[in-house]
Structures are given as structure tokens and as C-alpha cells.
Image 1: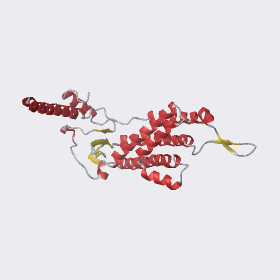
Image 2: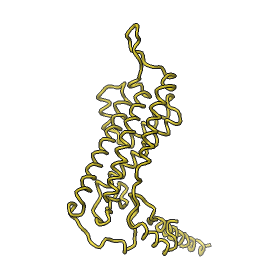
Image 3: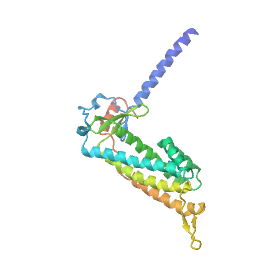
Image 4: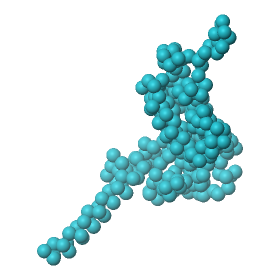
Length: 274
């Protein structure tokens, strides 16, 4: 019995090492990634020359796109901040709206808005799906923006930078002119979507309900829920869907320039990432 107890831990360690090795092997890039990926370990993919001066590493057009992405991202986040504080808490004192805006992160505000959306009786499943799609894209673009703004110059010739995220994991991000220009166009389209989502939440939270003026009494009468669900909200949802289709029809974010080499290395090593 004693010998069995001694051998079992060693077998467990062997299994653990094999599993960890398998996980490391799966964590390598596949060559299918767009915009962001785990750094490859192949030494042949390292840049031949390093450049540490941003103005020498990148063209003026690249630097301009990086600045434009940062500013456009600020506009998107400001719109989400407005919905998540001033619209969602429109019936509360202004100081509480400001305190809420300062206390909640962007992810927390989006989670709160999703909770509000799910509990709404004015929005149907199609409307909720559209809003979720826009929110998911907001988080994705924000992740790209953070990577671009906080990246370090790596392979400037191919437009590849490196960065470490909040979880202390290392990644690579594309900063080529094509990648930056494409991302900026996507973010411009996304801002229009978020503004449309803003209008929907104004009705959902009753912060700004549409209505009409009574011709006799000259008193403004808000539309009731049935009228909103039948006439107003479907119109805004259709506009949101149209904007989302336009965004998805834009040029897709590019693959990494060495994607073919990554796939050939993986095939040589026995199908890594398949």
C-alpha cells in the first residue's frame, strides 16, 4: 500500500505536465487571427531590425490614425457613459448621476444596461439582440483601442506591436495603416449605432418618451406602451439593424502579414491549433 501511495503522486505529476504541455501547444497562434493574437514562439518570425522611435517606426498616416482611434473611442465611451448614468438614472438627483458615472466602469455600465434591457417590456427579442450586438462590438473595439494605445513597438516593418493586458498576458496587435484605417471606419459606424441605442433607452427608461401635442388643450401627451411597441420602437430597431449591416459590410480587419508562415510552422509541428 505504501508503494502505491508513493507512485500515484508521480503519475499525477506526469499527467499534469503532459496536460500543461498540450495546453501550451494549443495556445500558439493558428494563422487565422485578425488584429490581435498570442505571440508566436518561432524565432524566425522575430523582426530583423528594432526601432524605438515612434516617428521613425511609423508613418505620419499611421500616427494620425492612432490618434483618431483614441479620440473616436472617447466619443463612443462618452455616449455609453451618458446612457449608463444620465439616461438610466434620469429620475435621480444630478449629483447621483455624476457619482454613478464616476463609480462604474464601462463594463459595469454595459452590464447594467443589459440588465435594464432584459427587464424591459417595450423591447422584443429582435431589439434586445441588436442592442447586445452593438454592446459586444463596443467591448471588442475598446480592447483593440487599449492595445493600440498602450502597445510597444515590435516589428514596425510589418506593422506588429506588442502589449500586456490587465491580466498580465502578452499579445500582439496590428498597427499597420490598413488595420488602423479599417478599425477607425468600424468605430465611426459603431458610434452611429450607439446613438441609436441611446434613443431606445430614452424610451425604455421613460427618460424622454415621445408623444404629441393635444390640439385642443395644447398639452403634451406621451405615447402609451402599446403605441410605442407598435409604431415607434420598431422604426428605431430597423434603423439600428441597417447601421449594423453597414458596419458588417465594411472591409474586415486584416490577418497578420505572417499568417502563411504561422500555418506552415504549425503544419510542420503536427497541426498546432487545429
